[in-house]
Length: 393
Ligand code: GLA
Image (cartoon, rainbow, N blue to C red):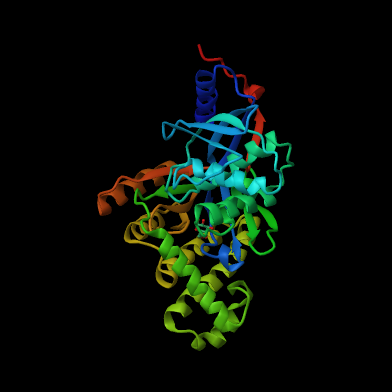
C-alpha cells in the first residue's frame, strides 16, 4: 500500500517462520516529521506535522489466551506479557505495547491476546517518532482484534496517556495525533487544544527532505521538562491557561513582567504559533517561498529563544539554507540532536542532498542520513492476505 514493502514483507515472512502459519492482520503506523510548530503542542498551540513513508509494521494473529507475544526484528528479541498481569519491565520496547494495552484495557476489559512480529524503518531515537509509531501500530492491533472502532483522536489520546503515565515521558499530543490521523499528500494543522485538524496539501513541486545530523539527544527528558515548566511559569504570570491564549501584541505590552529567560521561552511559543498558522495558509496557497521563510524564522527562534538546538543542527540548517534550491530549513522535533527538515525544489532534491551531505561532513566530521520523504496516511490495518505474501519454505 505504500513504498514501504521492505518491513511489511519482512514481518509477514518472519511471522510464518516463527509461528508456523500466516498472520491474520498487518497493522502499520507511520513516523512523522514536523514542518513547523515546535514546542507548541504542550502549550495548547498549533503544529503542522506530516506522517512520513517510514513506519512500524506488526504482523499478528489472535491467541486463545491472554498473552501478547511479540518478536521484534529490529531488536532481534522476543518479549511477552500477560494482559491479566501487566507489569513494567523498565525501558524495553515491549513496554510501549504494554502501556497501550494498559490504557485500552480501561475501556475494554476483554482485550484479546495475540502473537506477532514487528519491524520498522523509522530511525530509532532520531526525533521521527518511532515510539509513537510503535504505540499506534499496537493500538491498531488491539483495536482490530478487540472489535473497537478506530477513532484516531481517541486512540492518539490513549497512546499519549500510555507514554505519559506508563513510560513516564511528558510528551505533548503531536506525535500520536499525526501517526494516528495523517493523510497522504498532506500535512495536518492540529489545534492541540481542541484536537481539530485541517489537512493542508504539501505542494507537489516541493520535496520535504529530512536531514539526520547523526547526533542523538542525551538527557533530553530533563531539558524538555524544564522547557515545559518555563512555559507554565510564563502562562501563570500572564494569567492565562496556556501560552496559546497570548497574542503577540499582549506579549509585547507585558513582556517586562517576565524575567528574561522566561520571556525568551514565551516569545518563542507565541511567535511560533503565529508562524504555524501563517505556514498552513502559505501551503494552502502553494506558496513554498513563504513557507520556507517561516521555517527559517522558526529555527532562529528555537536556537536563540527556546535554546533547544545544538551546533550540528545549526550547521545542518545553515548548509541547507545556503543551497539555491532550498526554500527553508529548520530543526525538527524536540531538539538537542536528531533531524532538521528542509523544503526544497523537487527537481533539485538529489543535488541538494549531495551538496548538503558533503558540506555537513566537512564542517562536523559526521556522516548525515538524508531522506526525501512523502506524506502518507496515518495508522492502518489490513488483512495479511491483502497483498499475498509467499509462505515461508
Ligand atoms: C517531542 C514531543 C512532542 C513535541 C515535540 C516538540 O517530539 O513528543 O509532543 O512536544 O517534542 O515540538
